[in-house]
Image (tube, rainbow, N blue to C red; front, side):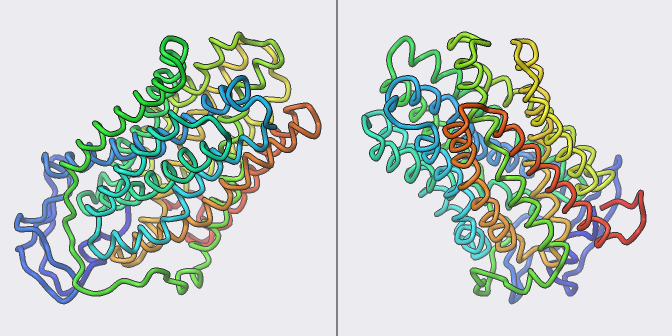
Length: 441
């Protein structure tokens, strides 16, 4: 996975590394310098409850950030069919787009704040906002009420906890960093499975308002678990810049940010539009269609663990390129799928490949960041570009459906975005490693 982060933090720190049962163990005497202050325990990486408890904390942060965002496909279908039936699909799609946009965009602020030692404050603010936003969504009846509560309030809350969920991992893991990130990222998939099923089942039994409140209560309770477990190991003693523009002088960083931006334009169109597609074309009943988002997110559990496991051995960029390319190929195949079995196969396979695309990305940034003190800032900058792609992606897809009356254009849009993103990643990979075909990157 590249050089140890202890070396990236400061060469003056006395460090010993040993191998035990295949694990790399790094120990340091607790002390302070003018850059970082450490907790009182010896620094041990890749093992022990303290390290894996941070993975559990990150799991619940993913569960309540991306898990809630990925549930929006079920909300979109409900809004189109019932609550906001007078609005066009592209107009309704702005709710989910702004929600995911804010989750990523405020990384430009939350990343440096995490680097500056405000992780707990970010967690408290985010936990309060997304819980409150879901409660307010439950009593909303108009488009703009839902926009304010679900898009802005939940989006800002989710964004406040997302960067800590990613940035805490490299403080406790070195050799198993990608695997730990993948396990934590399964919280996204679990949230994307649990929340849509909860919403669709409870909405039929107790109505939209109380179904949404139950989601809010669940997010509140699981957020408390993360808040009680997360512990920042490195506490900076110097001010951090909100933006590190010099990072864009690195062509590998710049190209990878561009690839992420392009990929995120297409990413959520399948999640948002697959349910209306099968219902409007009579492929599935509305009841069965509600489970498609959960199926997609369930398959992404494997898509988040297996690619991250492989990334520790062959390099994160090397595993992300095929995951991205396969996502594009699957999206284009959507054009010819018109059976229940075909749609289920599509969402399961797409969930696997798209899960790899989203979860391995942060590990790539860990690898190409020369100084881990800047990781939160650089990650936040990349999230801004991802957020812009996410913001325009699903409304463009909705506009295509509205203007053509067909979902074929959406499939082409998603496919082209992923294929182009894979091509840009390939260029970044060879700039990083040179012409070596089998080099780890």
